[in-house]
Length: 98
Image 1: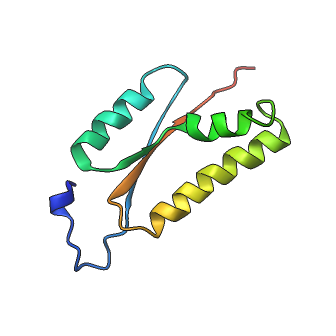
Image 2: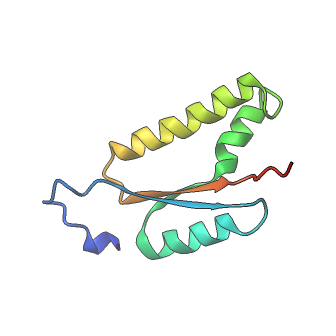
């Protein structure tokens, strides 16, 4: 949907949500930016929350998870209540072999 396609009189115009998920370094942010350029959505790159958390705690620790999850939840909640067209979220799917 482009910004021009959005019907502001329709109360069902909740922001859209797209997840771009995949293993590390496959081009998730490149894909997300290309989609955003076409539909006017904003992009939440997973590194935003990760880098915020890493400023204070090592990766994977309880403090790290608290900050990373809080950033993501805050952005999602704010977008859900906004008049933004939508959000694209990149996310690493780290499959464990074992």
